[in-house]
Length: 163
Image (cartoon, rainbow, N blue to C red; front, side, top):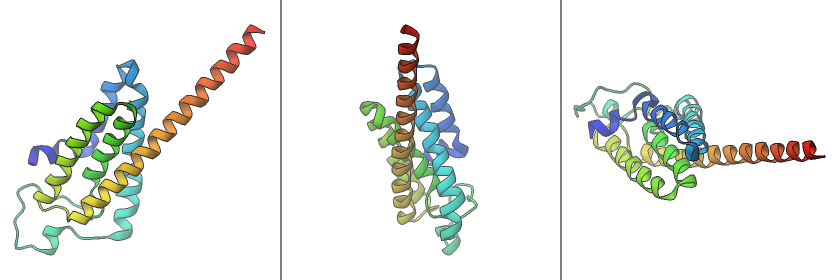
């Protein structure tokens, strides 16, 4: 469980996935969607929602339970680890279904680990799932829109050169 939780620390997984996808031409759009989704989670989850809700973590409320990982700082709702994983999984799924299913399984394991390690309530994790899926859909839609406009512009320029 610790390994799952630490695998997503500091956005390292998102950066790694982005870099790998940049080297595979068929996956570049996916890489941009993953990075956009991750940055959206950072903005909406970490910088906005956590400071609006201000929910203390379970181990802070119930100090009788010792947690087995380094105590995370900050507020509990929503789970940023969960949101980041589900944002990435959604972006991947919307471009590559099979790979996306694997990403959703990984995201679900990370989500479970956050509750198991007693650093989030189930509602924090559920909020993270919803936020992540929304950010993944939004980032993917934006990437597809930008790519379509870019392709349309290239076609228009090519037609003008032919005339």
